[in-house]
Length: 225
Image (cartoon, rainbow, N blue to C red; front, side, top):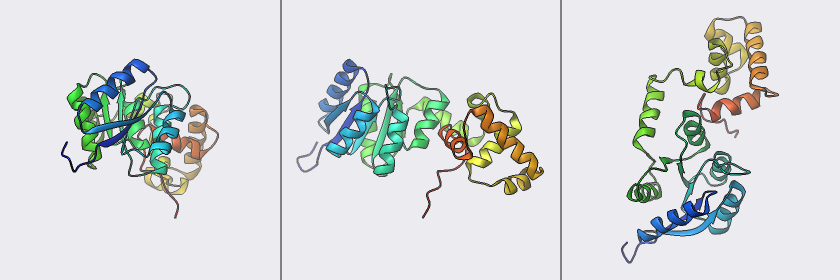
């Protein structure tokens, strides 16, 4: 690190103390990163970020209490420019797309080597996004249509038609417009929506939208005003 550059300030979150210790040592040894706080759960992570105002957060997903995905969503809502790197053992699509929908700009598996983790932190600090090779392949497959069975894996209890309706609901489209797109009677769409709410065990349309978007369906959340 040059004498006129500032170290990247990082908060790390993981519920395993020894992993946090090792990760902090790896980042600090680079000379370009300063670990300013550690957290063992989502609530502590939010408090640590409020207290230290880091440039980057490195977090696991599976933590007690408030999990990593929920914490990411809260952090990015408060500070949209914050770079969040997920570092986890979870490589399933639901975890991946849930984290990306929440606002993570990086996603690595814990088998990444030290140099790759440091590079990822510095890449996020420069404003770019970074994903491990396996993760990047999943993202490409999803958006190019090579992974069309993804929603079936996430919501196996729904029929193919119900998943089509849920995807449009997650885009913020009303029943009348959905009926037009799918060439269905509006009453049929209402029946599909009711079935979706029942099968997902959610109380209303907004809760279904939240579940769908966490799973990578639909568009970005609508923000009024």
